[in-house]
Image (tube, rainbow, N blue to C red; front, side, top):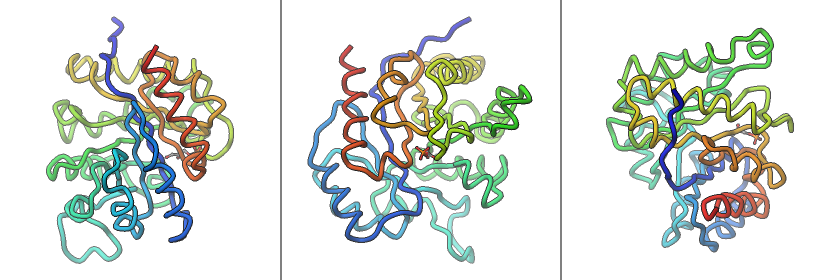
Length: 258
Ligand code: 13P
């Protein structure tokens, strides 16, 4: 049975990945902070820029997030940032399980689930990223892969942990390739993910924001946002360009006004 999403504010999140300088980050942040949107806007800078961005965003409605967090509270974990640290410096959200963390830094489903749990325990809003590789899609494993990634979190944290969390479907083959999933391809997966969660709790599934990520740009955002189960976007490249980021936020505003 189809599980209809309830109306929630769309979320447009910009993951800056490992890009930017003090100067470019200042310019981008002040351009974004100066505009008002109906959709929720979130920027996710490299950790070292978090205090700078937090200060520049003060008084604006743009939210701040961390690109990753440690599953541990504190201690001898060189290079890591805890959830409490991210919160203390103004982050409200944290990405967990981005495909680059999974593929390049060997984060397992279990570790991603532990990071999700750490976010929930401290009050950070986790943005759980899931998605299949091209090889997995071509061998017909798309659903199995993303369901496995979500199930790991369900098993560790329970469906209740998805209340106020965010899910992001980012097919790996669409990230940074300019090859976006078609609105239809994206919608099929968003609806499947929502239904899967609805099997555990329909109310939480209905209220869950599911973002699409992977080569979203100012030209394709409106078509993606028009799909019923797409509640926003997780941007990479487009989030580094203030004009493109703004245009995508405007597309989300327009969708919310429809
Ligand atoms: P691109 O928009 O550059 O494809 O990156 C998407 C992404 O990985 C966002 O987290």
